[in-house]
Amino acid sequence: MDPAVLREDMVDGLRHESRGTLSDDAVAAAMSTVPRHAFFDDNRTAYADRETERLGTRVLAPSTAARLLEALAPEPDDSVLIVGAGIGYTAALAAEIVGSSHVQAIDITRRVVYEARKNLAQAGYDAVFVDCRDGAEGLPEYAPYDKILLEAAAVNPPRALLEQSAPGGRLVMPLGAHDQHLAVLEDGDVVERRGAVAFNPLLVEGEEVGAVERNRTRREDRERARQAAQSRAGWEQDWIDWDG
Image (cartoon, rainbow, N blue to C red; front, side, top):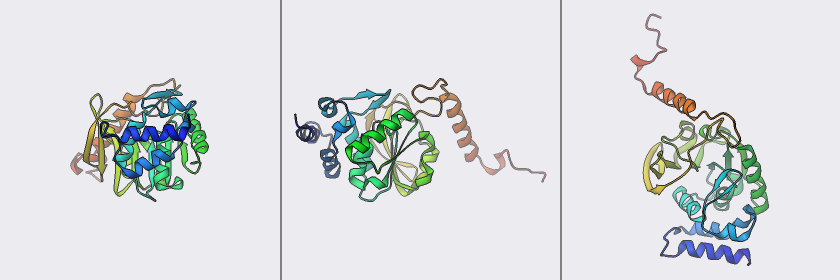
């Protein structure tokens, strides 16, 4: 079947009142335009509303991608960072709205980065920059960002992403461990909760697909220690030399 027909059927299904998944016109237009089949091996898999897997990474169902983009609310010319590029489809949707040159995407797994670059080029969004980075560290070279989308769950928003968000910027992420919700943050504060979600945890250095070392505990302990140190009152700081 013609991919354009499958794409319109997908969008119509998501917009149907019985689903209530897709209501934003800009996101609907982007999903009607981006050739999702360019990111898959076959058309029917591309336009079916179900989650799949590719190169060890989760590929979001179209309905989930729509939820994320509606929460992110990108606008033309916004600077956007996608953390967890995956196969590149979400980045393409953002690029369709804000412009390809305004979208940066990162992923911790190198072969997934190569896949995203290839797919985005095939779909006509080769101006999207995709790099191999630790998602918890973000991409400071292009900061600040008007909109940041984290496609992985964390108990707390990564400090680096908060620092790279522009004043009044928007960070959308699955917040929580076992019980997660889709959170919208502005200036570091949760301003909206958009229902329950279930995402894989944010991977950090040493946890990418194919890595030998699994060091989530050590990295999380280090991050919590840093946060605790920065939150101490002056008299609690270890570095103060009272005798100097």
